[in-house]
Length: 341
Image (cartoon, rainbow, N blue to C red):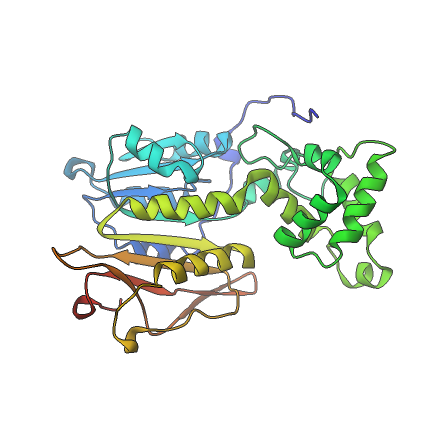
């Protein structure tokens, strides 16, 4: 189903982006001017530019900035011009491939700022927003299957699963049924068309209580269309594998699904830890919008490495009503070497 927008020249100046938790991430990365760093989600290059400004190209300092969105890539190249940075159009799940093609074996630090960007939401034609009428697109890469393809072809069972698993939507079955019923008459092609269908599937009391009844549905479809959780799962592994001794990985999450996946990943990485009990600390069960930092220390001959949990979590900022936490992790070589940042 073709919902491609007519190609228009893109102006990088129109890509507005305010990097969140900027200082916290810069502190977490502890940037070495001679180091090699990766920004897996360039966006408007807000984080990338500040990282690149702290690198010394003459000493070998270098930033690799990735994004799958062509608009973001064009913007990042314009805003990183003249700095020791290379911009690559690719999803961060393939970060290892991008680094290897550039001849880079290890990096000193990496950053992921997850989720949809403000530019993608503000550009109605991209089809991410339920507040403006536009083709039902939602593709971050602007390639492949659209949200319209998905809602017009998947079964009620699969649509309900997507809405339930990716949007935590309590009315998933009802919404999926209304989508299937509507598309039998005519295909669902626009954002407002879908928003109206979602609202009509909800009880009147829920519609009165919820100002944005489509929010969870749009989130779920966006995650499904862009395979966001699969990309995060693979991206965390490949980036962590490429961290040099002493390297750090910072991740900013924006909703509970991302947050839960990252915490579970840390928990799995920590399973074989042999550190002293005083370093053990359970991950909080609540989901927060969070910036998370890993630090990887060098391995000594004959020792096995482990992940040691820091003994506390610090509330470091507030944004859009959501607290942000900075759980710290230390990759250690032995219990005696374990330290907390």
